[in-house]
Length: 307
Figure 1: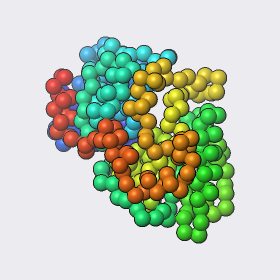
Figure 2: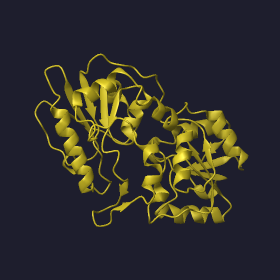
Figure 3: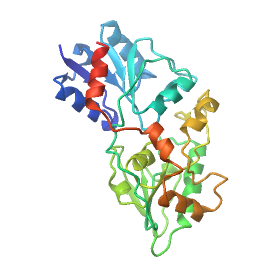
């Protein structure tokens, strides 16, 4: 019975699915009939359904929910599922961070799967900046801190605009829900959470937080992130906002080295020049957290070894 089910979050499991089907596995629509299930998460409501499938002797595997290491289980209200067979990750740095906060799952490195990896491509000047603000949840909520980070970053980027430097804001959901506004001379693109790299590949500099700018780093585009030192947070309302418990244990491992809002980076033009001219500040971060391209055979071999 070489058939499996996958919760394919925003297309982020496409490479995993292709690797399996190439090796003769069949993807089915009924998880109850699968030999194993691939899921991007085992927390909140997903926990109950996965636990039920495990009771039916269906193995449960996890793949990355997003580009950066999975820190779901470091939030106070989440719990480890005793039935997880293994968690596949992109690079060794993910394991280092997840072990730092106590993640007990078997962790298997299978390579970066979200986009092709390209060498860093330096620029001599900046002509187009793409800004991807922190996006709200599906219910439209974005916490006050994240709106403030978006706003401060947007103001700094606007100050850079000239006749030769353009600014594009690629936002998800309503612009106001991102805490932003329409300004003269700025191009706005309402994107979708579909891993599109179109604007990234047209940019000389990408600025953002989490998955989108990490795609830019992987594709060799000069990148800045924003507010990286703040403790990761999650919630559906301001009152229910929660924060990771062990931030001090892995903060320095996770933080991207170039941050447009860092107090130490008061000289913005100098920061931009460092970002576009060389990857000497970011190469180690890229090696640890992006690593090597996805290895389909390595992934399938690892998965099958648990069956």
